[in-house]
Length: 82
Image (cartoon, rainbow, N blue to C red; front, side):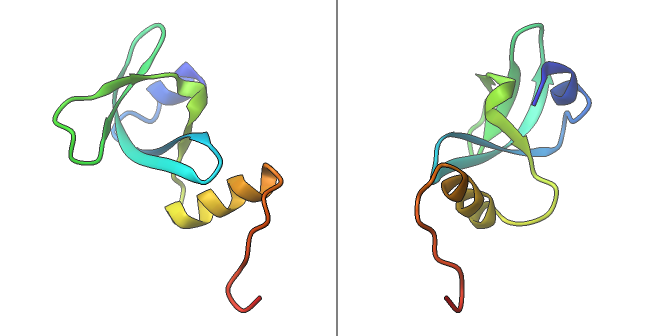
């Protein structure tokens, strides 16, 4: 995500992920010239976050996002019924 994209999605849910298989959801509260400020989970205050580490949640689940990220990183993933 870019800063401009983050600005256009203030108030929407995002996924923060730096390591395949690990992710955290939050809501974009505001954006400045360098960072998106995201409130994660039950945090009371937003944290400065690099926008390139954010993905907008557009349907799907956090579990599916993690599974796709792990597959793209080359980790073996199992799907239901496999």
